[in-house]
Image (tube, rainbow, N blue to C red; front, side, top):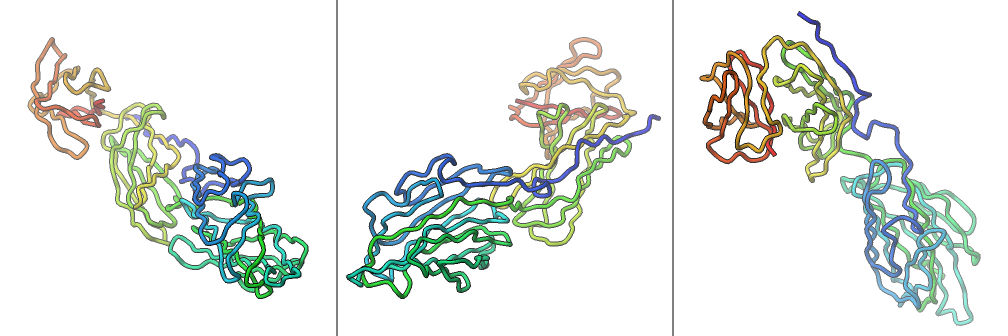
Amino acid sequence: MKHAYLLSVGLLAFVTSSPAFAQDLDFATTAPLYPAGAAFHSYTSIGSPAVNVDLAISGPGTASIPSPERAGTGLSTPNWKFNNSGETRSYSFTFGDPVTGLEFSLNALQYRTFAITDHNYQDKITILATDEGGNAVMPVIPAGTGYSVNGNEILATSTTASNVNKVRFPTQVKNVTIVYGNGPLAGPFPNGQGFTIGDLDWAGVVLPVELAYFRAKPIGTVVQLVWETTSERNADFFVVEHSFDVVHFTPIGRVKARGESTRRQAYSFADDQAHRSNNYYRLQQIDKDGAKHYSKIIAARHADPLPTLTVYPNPSDGQSIGLQGNEIDLGSLQLTDLNGRRIDFQLVEETAGHLTLRPRIAVKPGLYFLSASGIRATRLLVK
């Protein structure tokens, strides 16, 4: 008997365990471009792994020109006039997946006094942030000239425009809201004022599952797939996918995930329909909100002592399926779907060793299996 062997295709992990890629929301260039004065805007597929970012703006006041607007230094909010010193305006960024290493600058903070002190203004910013669980996340705000810092509040202390470089978040964040208003030096009817939110940068996206490994081991006629996660958040289930060419993958099984875990969790799946040729596998991890993430690909090949059943064409239209094989026990021949349900069929022998199978009911597109006693089961893809 030939020895079985395992062929590995790359290191296996969900995207989270790969090195982080720099990601950037550049307000001047990131598409779709922000339309001046819009109260809501969505940015899609930023970085790798991709993440969507929604920006929602709310609060009272008016501006002589559309505000905010794109600028070379970020998102500028010029000439915003509050009705009184107690009003605030909020700029809320929500990430489709939590991100790590988020940082941005806050530019052009200052206070101004006028002959009519009723019109004095003093820029004040409060930064509120939460993680995916809704827990508060505190920013790291560096000290500097022209402003003071008190926890998550920044207050302009100079009549000269000053910049905060950079506000950082050491842990993951899902939502960041920048609340803009006035400090105690402002008069009851502040003049038009503004500031700029610098471009947003972050190191990577925090995905629901971190995969320690994904391996395939041939055992006789079965390929045993095993994998282990180091942490899980909001995870629903895994779909095991198979391919012959590393291009077209077909689901062959489903394994329920633990869902929430900070400890290592082990999983396994046995592919008892593996072929003698190369078998390629990957995992598709599905979140509870329907989002999908893929592992990299592994491969396995082994010697199979059982004779095989040739099916043609494959893929098939599901109406007429050709079979070729010698010494088939026709009484044990079965056509089953992915869930093991049998499908009734009519069998016609065209010539010796050549058969035509016609299902008695309409067969939906999907993956099916043809098997018989002493014959290696064969996958049939119906399109």
